Length: 300
Image (cartoon, rainbow, N blue to C red):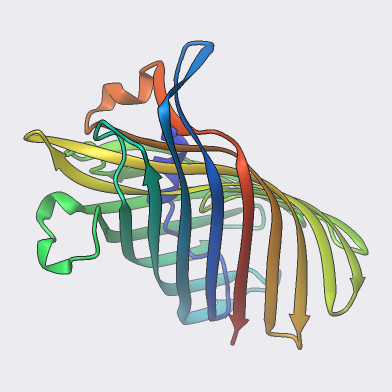
């Protein structure tokens, strides 16, 4: 789970061939806080919490040319941000923080290599703060990343790829494997599976041109780089969401996705900023809770 979150932040390539803006607000209901070690879990006192997540982003193509198979050669720029407010209660130890601010910017490039293969590459950076006080930004709160992914077009609706990404999540440049998956079926009933900027799976039914109903599963998250007791730390906030999503379409360019369901688990923990924390068997998280979100997507 923690490795997937790292991949979310190093996967900065833009996947839209047209300009797009999105906003999203997420609510996580109150649930108890627990520690899991091996196969056993234990609630920590009366500690509990809820959360609100506010996100937004924009993708802007700078130049684009389509080939005969309608695949783009494109330069684009992407920017985004997220603010998380954690309502933590009854904690007697500094196991969690109260807010997260993430801001990022990336330059992206993609092009077809031949009829079967394409290349996606990106370079960018971001700020990952445990507060909204920009005056407190230090070098240790920043990350830089770059990635190169080779994508195989297996079918007209199925792309699968892999490559390498590099970033300094653990305080020094390090290579990670990078993965890409995009599978979509069309028609009145459709399925979509995407592993690009997180994991998203949906199975939906197009009621009419203005309404689509879907069952969705998503994994996403945010993080903050901080110092605690004189040591560099990472606070991870990652969640798995299951829900029903009605998506209202207003014309051809505006959609309003609403999601109601369950947050199956919500990781929230502070760990050392070192590679070995990926492999540790002990983790802290909030239990399952109610979940709701509302979004706005605008294409240009």
